[in-house]
Image (tube, rainbow, N blue to C red):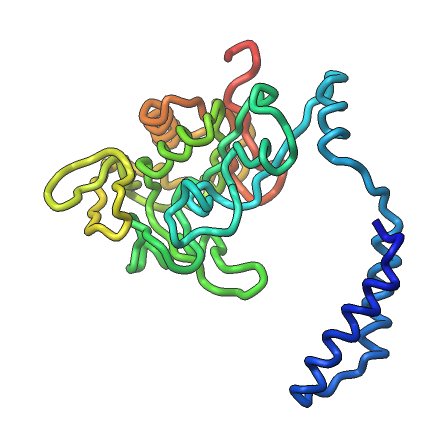
Length: 275
């Protein structure tokens, strides 16, 4: 890969220097090159492999491969809320197109979601809350961009969008995060359908800019801290009812729930025997 590096670098350097000179842009090339070449030396420590062959060799030898998506389903360039999407496939199929894994090699598909909804930046968000409840979810859940510090948009859980995500990804098991953020709410709202121009639908409308009103089901909150709970037996009855309602609507088991930010604050609900 690097056999012709010096020649290519010299050509690219000369080209960009001409552009910068024409713009009267001042810079310290020596300092910039020093930092850049230090980065290259660091990268040279890593072994370069043919990743698709490496991964498939491991699969053929009986190893399990865990692929982690970087962004949510609704940001997928093909199946997300276009044009408010990213530049690639974020759904499960991205493991095939991005890693070279054959579709029939995909086993379990874990869908990770929050007990409520958030969105960064622009785009449709039917259950978004512009009130004290939304502010409370944001503050309790620390919903701020890790780099920019920008406040995330927050709202109640949207089962219409979540069902769509389960369908598109072929989710077999669900994992619910940040359950503890809802610990203090007296009432929990769940969006089960949309009202679009007077018609109730339970699927994402083709026109994402349509006048969508969420249709909610209300469940009683548990109003107790789950932070120190370690097993399903300890969970409040109201929280268990919330989980069972979601499972019934989604048709997929919620196998793990998070009740805090630490790794230990994770509860497994089903064992392999129970499944």
